Image (cartoon, rainbow, N blue to C red; front, top):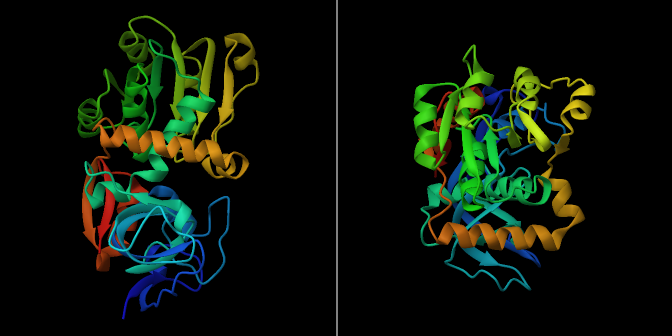
Length: 324
């Protein structure tokens, strides 16, 4: 019988256990997927602990992104068929060997991507695209600064920024991560831990102010990063892996710059047609080989606790994936 990683109460990875789990037959608008690869992010572990901004019902099966093979389709589903390689997302229910999901949240995997790469593609790349296109208004020739650049959305932002014609500066905390960012397409890298971080950013930007900052980190980085912006600069708040920061409100005034929140879930609910169009575009770019996730380490399904802890600590350069 298929299995799932589940807990009756929220807690750390050690609170979760593997149990037998039967996925129901798909109803109208649903598909059942034999899951082959699962992406794990910081937010997945945060949600599993009950510390995310949205609290799911219990008992809870974690996870938000995966790839696999379609086993069955429900009434009205026409864009995928039994046997197709698919990738998609869900708020929970992913850490399972077989799952039943909303079909509209899944798409065929481009031939250019492996199932492991596809498992970590949809949320990060649709977030990055929405952030830089709709919220950030990034234009060709502008300069983009990416914080936490070796992370899930960071690598996506680098590649999407390059596809939009921007100069991309990546900030990362270790040499391995900075090299990863360069391989992903960044034009320049800076050391997040440098005592002269702003000086490094200025040099990397060839003396020009930053047009857009992509920030999934927050914490102590927010203030110095906001100060790198020039006139009409846009500061995109993606997340807060480094903690929730405080920004003095005189800074947006003095810099004539904007602080902009990015929330993919809200965007999808408010403008479903646009988020669907975004997915079409990122799939097209992936098919052209312009967008490709970087896998840092692959764990076995039974090693989920080690995998979750690795994703939460953020020490792996590249994405953490569980292979089923």
